[in-house]
Image (cartoon, rainbow, N blue to C red; front, top):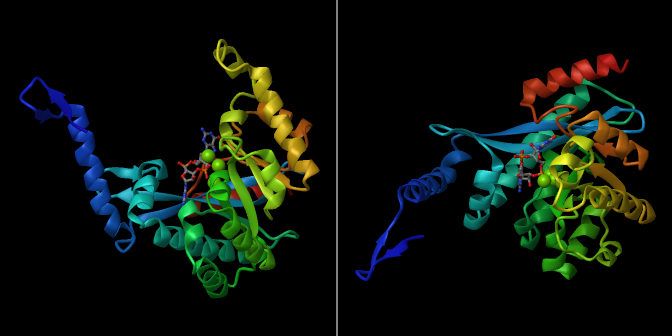
Length: 295
Ligand code: C2E
Ligand code: MG
Ligand code: MG
Ligand code: MG
């Protein structure tokens, strides 16, 4: 965006803004080729069941190894991918890559309860008529049963096209594919909305989890009162229990947060406390060690 200066009507960029605009443009151009050039990769963050501290599965999180800018966070390029429509191919590529990885892990680490994989889907996917066909195709190609896949969508998706989404969610349920509402609590869906949709899980946003320990309580003085944050988390967990939904917490970074989440019977959690998102090798190593330790 340009700044007007004086009466000459010239549009003048200030330097950092100009740089930023250029970089944005470069990223957008490069993104078109990232997939075909094999620059995208998937990281995996473990999700741990809190009752017995067993590993449940992983969340797949996309990364972009940019040739000159280094490893880019999805926060940088997902919005661009959404604007340009590239998100569709990207999300299916992530789904397929994650399911292949899951297949390898299930074979290498056979557990009583097979490992699961959470995959994020952009809201844009839900307007797409061939979503189910594409999902079926991936499951067929990889041999992963629907019951091992959890698709994460945000609350806002429910609001934008409630009828269409309800039908689609039912179709996913028929395939035993679970649906998880990501970043729960940050959207603006009314809670009464929830039981109208066949969803299985609520994932408490990490902004709420971040305020569950005394350390951050101190730094939040003057802003939203921490006791309220704690109550929000408790309320979400109660709501989930009343609706028969699983509740997951994201962004768990310390033992204090973990203990609180356990005290309110949160089902599972992920966060740096257990492990950050790891590349395929890193996640395999983590899994090996975790399973060894837990006997
Ligand atoms: P999300 O789905 O809510 O993923 C959780 C984010 O929290 C991840 O950021 C993860 O790295 C970060 N995180 C995990 N544990 C902790 C923790 O203990 N502390 C803190 N501070 N952060 C933690 P990431 O990987 O940068 O992803 C950002 C967002 O990008 C994701 O949020 C998701 O909405 C989106 N995204 C990622 N991969 C995909 C994808 O394949 N498709 C789509 N459509 N969106 C994706
Ligand atoms: Mg997610
Ligand atoms: Mg999330
Ligand atoms: Mg989030």
